[in-house]
Image (cartoon, rainbow, N blue to C red; front, side, top):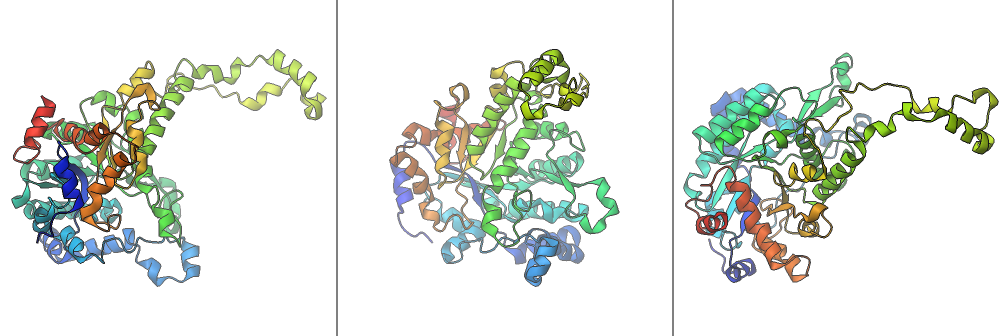
Length: 480
């Protein structure tokens, strides 16, 4: 059902390099997906699967509650109007891979990596059995659906991460048996706080986020090792709605703004501080749909904190180092209205007298940072950042003058087709190119954004990723 030459297609014709979309979306066709869930776990599984999605992520209870009940229970305003409903052709394109395959040239894309919609939301898989069979059903659904269209697109497998064992089992199945070559891991796992067991009504509010790198319930190194063995990058696309400052009971936009970036920062910071990028220097991690602004800020923050709080510098702040005689004299001379004869001589006590265990004060020990350059080396080569076409902050990735050590961050183009962010799929590539037209980035920067960085990401562990696709020749030439 080709609709003619689009402006995005005309743009692609002018470029001397492919455009790779690293974050499009398909919408699950629920009547058929239900068949896969039933095959995986029976009729009860279908009921539990629907209930989990509706009550946990969509929060259907919100619609049945009065305003007072919403306030008393602090029920988060759920997402609504999330698909391009008015553009029926685009809506159908999000549902049917063969239609997307037919239209992909219209969008100006040479190749697309597509993420599930239902699989983005780990809360729907809170129950052990439903989580595992839900991921299995989604992966079978997408593997079957895309068999014929691998020359232009590939789906991402949904991988559960409550335990390393379940993650490894599904990685082996989805990649090893079903042949999927992209995997999506949740950015976090909600763990109940033990102290909340005495207050069952408050249990849903009392949780911590396990981000696998630091303070984790398990050792997730076997998962990263399995990813490397199977040749897949670890990609993350979890929502941050419903946590922290994103819990408004009345305003979805308030909850939505910045939520992917918040989830991305949480897992990236954990992987870095937990030493994962040190132990797995070849691994690639992709954080989707949050842009790159938070990443630049995080890199600067890590550098700044290491400079002030590395194991050699942090002892400067040990209260035992205070010159008490000098502080007492200064107190007498300058205390003014604070002066009290009965407290004189105890001025330093307010700064604490706790003696820290020397084994715990090196908070950069896991990532083995010895100098500023190490911070950059443990961060830049391993991390990639999915940026949408309408995000002008993407230009920061290529701003070597303002980035530490003149680095360029690995921004990759993600169209987000299939969701409300893209009212017209045929214009998204053109929208991304507006950064060039406005002088925000150069032609070379755009090439890196839509081609070089994606190719390096996807081929780092799987050199054959683009084999049999229109990108194959250009990717081989790029990678030498």
